Image 1: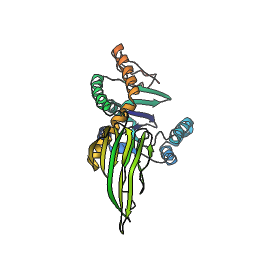
Image 2: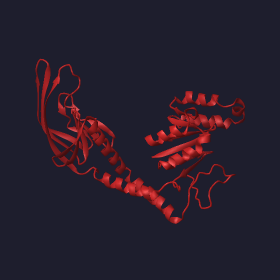
Image 3: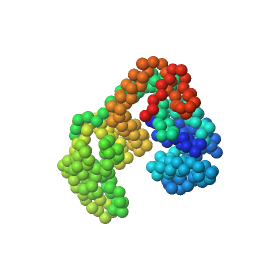
Length: 307
């Protein structure tokens, strides 16, 4: 996770991945009158910011208008927390406390705070190692098959297909419907996921359609799929594990999805850890943000990294 601090107009704007604990502490630290959540359209947001500036400042510092217009047009300040600048130190410390990487944008420079005496990197590494070991259990594996059969009914006036198989596609990051309405599962569902129908029958009565389907699915090991509120994990050839139903099943499936997303970022995680460790092994230091080149504020043993 990361957070970007943008300082402009005597305020700081905080864009971050959602972190419940961080947001909760932000609300406790900064009074409601000194913060607001921005989600306006670019132009209306731009006018609100401009009208809050003194007219003489706008006339004397035209570059401010251009910079704000650029930020608004690019959506940089949309969906961000707007906090009075006086709370900057508190916000920066909160970010580090919650293990958020911090990028500070000011005067065209970006300073990345990647280490601090407030952050125990050894503790982070231990926690991360445990997380990666757990995540490796859910790495997508070889293509396997599993059999499935179902007998069900669907009321005539019900628009929903009761054969509502869904598979989670990691590459597309979404659940994909595997069923052609009233025709059983699709032959090609998505990349590396398919089905083979052995038997499919439909019987129509006065009030319902009666379906009977029998066949096999092919997908990588550790693929998630859902059927009628039940969540399953494919763990091997003709082996599926029931995770649970409704909220319980969804929660377990969501946790597995997060593990699989971690594995997608594994090379990036390893590179970041190596870079940080090399810096820490070099010499003891604290990396701080430099607010002004005219007024150095770094401690004796410090290192500034500017991207």
